[in-house]
Length: 493
Image 1 (cartoon, rainbow, N blue to C red):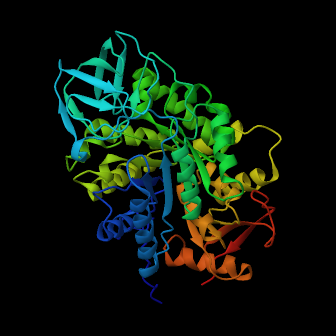
Image 2 (image 1 turned 30 degrees about the vertical axis):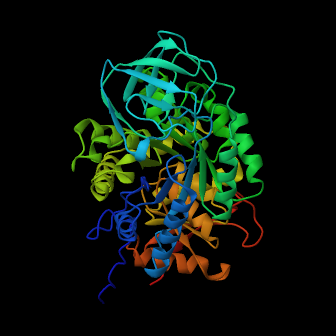
């Protein structure tokens, strides 16, 4: 009997391989990637999450992109479950708009003014800022665009400060500004614009939101209060020293973490960022919460078709450290090689996964979990252990809100994990966790297990006759993380 052809899915490494990529890829959508044709190609190439940065795009732009992505998934009958992530400014100081919206070149040694007039359009001699209180002193450094441009303060004026440009470079609109000699605590965690954007996110039924420059647990709590009972997940962006110092408490309150190394590296000594990144990834792994690494992953691919070797090593190391996903920023938003960036990142991540010792990782994680272990965690770790002992081909998690599926992913099983749910948003939100293949089951709870196994066979993740480990709980009314049952099943033909 000839086996039916395998259904090609973006989770596969390529169309000719049944191997899957476990590391998730986030693409920031901008002018270079907003067209329907490019978005369709990104979905086919394996984009798991589409990020829209509301500091750089309008709500109208975001709505067009969201509608287009959802239309593509319906038209192509895709089961890719692409999630939507809206990123908001938060207490992040930014430069203002420029004449004609065009970036300007600054030359080292020139005078440059930061002006306290938010309505002013900047040029190569001046720019406005979003923070207008007295702060810097003569001799202080200021960094723009994750440290790509450096300035030294030389004079304080009534409505501006005069600086010397330390290095030549391109200044764009709405770029982050760092003040390494100062900590700004008087900015609200959520501005009036952010509140409007959070309301917009709920209206659009997006899957994730994040607020930049989270400083402490109170900042995350403020976002949660605004969301009320809405099911959108909150990602806390760590990009300043306060956030790094308060990471443990922030991790407890947030649904996931994003490490923005660019902005963080302009505020914290760069040699400390790499070590901090490893520690934060390890802590998020033990907590079972997804953690993403963002900014300057494949920066050179904005203008080059191939990444630098150091960038490839950076991506591989992040994967081997245990990151759930990697974020492409300017590479896919404004870059010249959008698809090449995605394909390069996936290839590098796949090789890193192949050369990682996940069995050793499982043992280490099981030892790290505080005792006594909650029931749902016990089921999750037992499923991974049982799958290894019986040589199972696949783990299937039947879940309502994704709790147990995330706990299974925490142990980094070496076989595919299909997370099946009757809730479309849950399926999309699971697409940010390492190793999970989300499956939205449009049928009833009575058929979800058999239909999920059939789906896994169609994707080539397993074959009839092999063993599957299945976790599930009550079909109706169970809360997140209350899975109570694990069973071994033979995959039907």
